[in-house]
Image (cartoon, rainbow, N blue to C red; front, side, top):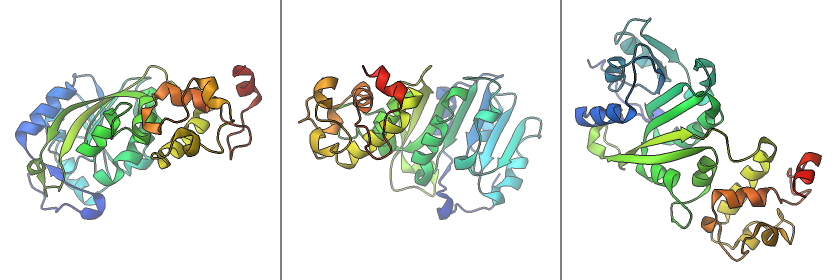
Length: 276
């Protein structure tokens, strides 16, 4: 059914329509009848329909209010719960039936994909897995390892909270209107426990951000002002390396050694004791 609604550029809409691609996505997700699942940005319902055939109840989050009447025709309210809301402000954890129980899927608008991923990772304790169609370049950054040209802030911040795997690519022709770039389906599974201790999170974020804001510089220069002179030796890291050479665990070690008084990165007493 076509509700006669054109894709809106301000919402970053590119509606998926290819039956073969939709079948591959559903197969990759492998929904179980009793799964607790939320779809972000259902649009015209191309993915919503096959998901409703597999799960007992589905929730969707849609920002474009003009699409809500059409979505209501897809299933009865006891099978389809529609949230007219901005996914960037939506409380996903509140909809989970328990820790690690929520499955999140969607064809995400390119213009919000990165902030939305961070929003979801902040609620990772409620999430079992996520399957998203994203711009291929973004997926390559998510799954990149140290030494790769795509490896950067997004790779490290995600790697500290989750595992990511690129499943397959999707050409522009699978969408209306066709985007100018390729897309890819990615599976993201939160770790049982984040690698970064809560008390270290803000320092870790700042260190990673500064490092990759100066990615062409050596670590010594890129992280100037954040680390005491002996931090690299203490962490077992050569200061002449560049940020893309470091694994997630190495960034965590460096964050634990950030200099007192560096911006808002003064260690708490517990941090100082733990470093000794």
